[in-house]
Length: 106
Image (tube, rainbow, N blue to C red; front, side, top):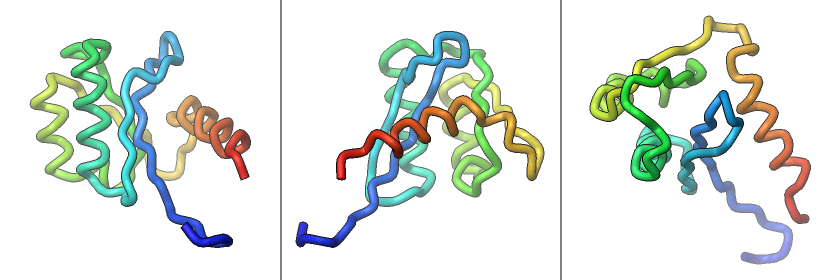
């Protein structure tokens, strides 16, 4: 990477609301639905994401797609999402990413 250039890296995480532990994640150079799939499948593979749990996400197009609904169904997860314009449902994720952004190495 040349000096002064920046390449974006996107991170999808699954955070357990009880323990606040990141139980699965995936990274890529794009923020599209397949990135979310990989994050969820990594959580399921670690056996920390159990069937029947409620999976909460925002209303982003990646999370609301028919394709993504199929992956959640395949993993046995129940979908939850907050109302449009209400930020409180994702406070834990926003806090996690704020810490990452403040702690990045320049």
